Image (cartoon, rainbow, N blue to C red; front, top):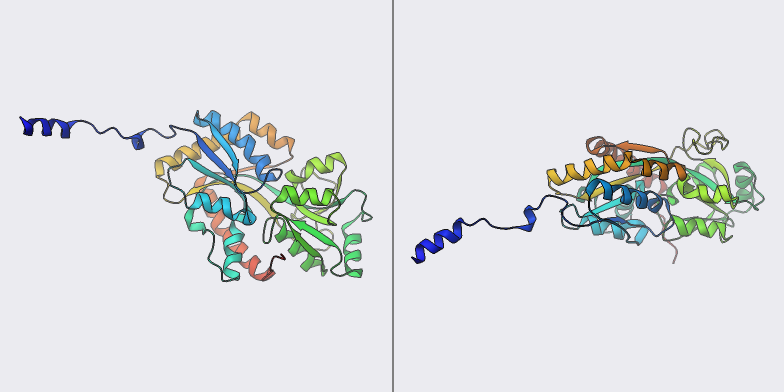
Length: 322
């Protein structure tokens, strides 16, 4: 009788929550930067549209620190179950390279993450306060040459997505400016608007509300072509400064995420990016939707990683001032 009971128990199906169809509970979309920047401007409407696609709540959360490394590392080292998604910008590729440059243990490495999809792509724009005396980029450059190290610029953090183009600009223009890093693009832009620094190079979506309000003046964009949202603003190349730089936003998950879950996430992101509500949100901030699916985005990230590694080496070691 005991043997029969034991056999019957072994024959019973095992109930496991791990076998539930994904997603079976709320998902977290993590932004590694503070509120107010382009990651939030893209991420919050994306989370809302992902809720429709997943038919599960998607909670948008800021997890900030170390130029995005804290939130990125959190996802990179999380369980690969698909319940923690990361939305990040192109600076995600720069941080590990900067760590190598300083012989530091990287907070994360790109092989700890899987690129799922690219969402949008936009140029950066050089900004000054509207009441500043410089009406052109050349006027700003001329002033900086007269006062080396006296004019200042803000950034989202050392080697962040607003620091890199600013370093490219100062090097290409042959000027010296004092770098004032902040914890993200939002605080860095607010610092310029508040008159605490002289210049900031922010991406177009993070800049448009200030430009439209008349608070900040755009002098030049960093892309090879003029920005659709700012057709009257010249490129730096047109003005004799050879720079081609832009910022994209993408979704990532932890490495070793099972293929079926990865596909479900990719399908949901594709649906969300096509959602009219998301498209309208991007139009509102003048961001250009530039979707790439998982295989295409993975190849793109590999190419961009090599380019960013070369760029970081060219910029060199820049210590963050305490």
